Every structure is written in structure tokens, then in C-alpha cells.
Length: 258
Ligand SMILES: NC(=O)c1ccc[n+]([C@@H]2O[C@H](COP(=O)([O-])OP(=O)(O)OC[C@H]3O[C@@H](n4cnc5c(N)ncnc54)[C@H](OP(=O)(O)O)[C@@H]3O)[C@@H](O)[C@H]2O)c1
Image (cartoon, rainbow, N blue to C red; front, side):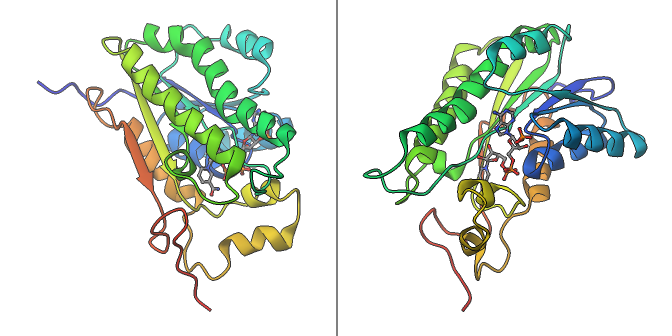
């Protein structure tokens, strides 16, 4: 017999990288779905403002400043919880679009640290609390860059493949325990900061990413998908969901209007 949809009442959902883009949108939507959301990111002012906005809308939210690459800080953060229902590993991003021949190893390291080790840190620290809830969900926001390469993808593609493999391996290793592992892999999403960060604040290069693309995905599109996946009945595990804008057929085939 199918199990009921997980009760969201009083359940905690932790969202990393909640200070902008997909993380902020996901926090808003999970709060509206009844989760008590815990917003984390390095920029304290932004997560505090968002927690206030969510609270003023009648939902439950708190903010906690956290760098996902700082393992001691992550372990300290985890001590605040006995059980949690949902962990959204969203913090991450890309740095540069150089070919392998000239890519900066420091950028590669930072991308691996954030997208992979950050996800590992949070997942390791919180897995016992997810198990203790009797009905936990780990979400990994990877990317279509975790499922295929493209020229200039370099260290981002490598890191997102790492995030994908982490999700797949964890699912194998914890089968039988009451925790689902869901991977959401978006293609082109137009968020305020992703491309700007990638190109070190160069607005012209950032704008070119989306140039002529009629409707890239929005942060809300991804957040809706995440919220849908985590609110499926407990026995339903959306292993991997790839979503792209209609104008993007693959990592390298994008329709651009002139
Ligand atoms: N936009 C896209 O096209 C796209 C497509 C596929 C996948 N994704 C993935 O989706 C996720 C969110 O992307 P986005 O578009 O929403 O980008 P974004 O607006 O740049 O958001 C990135 C978030 O990650 C946080 N972050 C970065 N490094 C961190 C660290 N060391 N510790 C804690 N938080 C950190 C940032 O917060 P602070 O700077 O305040 O710490 C920010 O909240 C990323 O993993 C990205 O790779 C994006």
C-alpha cells in the first residue's frame, strides 16, 4: 500500500545557497508548502532579509550564516537539530569558461570545494538527523553539466559530474534507510548572479549567455520542480530530473532568436 505524502507540518527543510537565485526561490516555495525553512549562505544580510520576508508572509523561516566548505562550521550548525526532514544542497556555481588548456586550477578547486565537498559536508553532517526523522529527503541540485560536457565547461562540468556521482552513490549506499536521494539537474536558468559570478562580474559576458534565448528557465521553475519532487509520497523517489528551457535541446544546442 502506498505511504502517505510526507507531513510537512513542523518539518525542517535546510536550504544551502538561499541568499539568491534557485536557493532563495526554493526556500520561499518550501515555506509556502509548510516546511520550517532554515536558510543558509555566506551573505548573512540577504538570508536574514529573506527569512523576515517569509515570516511576514505567515510561514516559518530562520537564517544561519554558513560557508558549506567550512567543515567545522557545518558540524557546529548540525548540532542545532535533532531531526530534519529535507536537505537541499543547492550552494554552488561556476567560475570561468576557459578551455582545459588554460583554465585556472584555483577556479577548479573552488568549484570542486563548493559543488562537491560542500554537498558532502552537509550531507555527512545531517544524514543521521535525516534518518532520525524516519522520513528524510536529500536533494542535490546538480546541473545538465553533470550529465554531459561542453567546450569551456571545464572545471564546472567536472565538479557537477562529481555532485551527480555523489547523489547516485549515496542512493545505493543508504537503500533500506528512510531517506530518499533526489537529484535535480537544470539546464539554462536565468538567475541574477550565476553568469555574473561565472564571468567575475563582467555584465556583457554574462548577458551573452542568455542572448536571444526566448525563455530561459527561471529560479521559480526550478524551485517548483524541487518542491514537487520532495512532496511526493514517501515511497516515491524521483532519482533524477533533468529540466531545460524548450529552447535548449542539449548543452550545446540552443535556439537563439536573431
Ligand atoms: N543558473 C543556472 O543556469 C544553473 C543551471 C544548473 C544548475 N545550477 C546550479 O544551481 C545552484 C544555484 O544556482 P543559481 O543560478 O541560483 O546561482 P546563484 O544565484 O549564483 O546562487 C549561488 C548560491 O550559492 C551560494 N554559495 C556559493 N558558494 C557558497 C559557499 N561556499 N557556501 C555557502 N553558500 C555558497 C551563494 O550564496 P553566498 O554567496 O551568499 O554564500 C548563492 O546563494 C548552483 O549549484 C548552480 O551550480 C544553476
